[in-house]
Length: 122
Image (tube, helix red, strand yellow):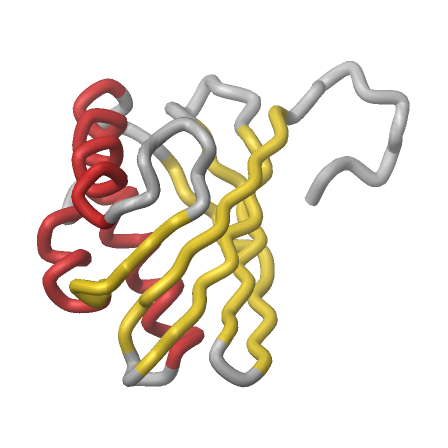
């Protein structure tokens, strides 16, 4: 499995609630992340993902595009908390070592249905 497929599979598993399995399969023990809302260690983000899934078990992930360069994979997606939610656009940047995720950056922006930009965020 290549890094792009690993990144997208990880995101799909997390969305489906298979978070601990996704971590076991794809995330290095040396993993760090840059999400500003949690401490930067592996366990803190794992716990946050589990809590988020418990709060929003019907989350929908729609991956729009991926970009791969060397050890980095960028995933641009639309995430909806449920079918009625307008969603947030997310950009996840994964860094890999030895076919495992060792670092993650994520940025999100809420979809504004009243935006004057006819091109949208996706």
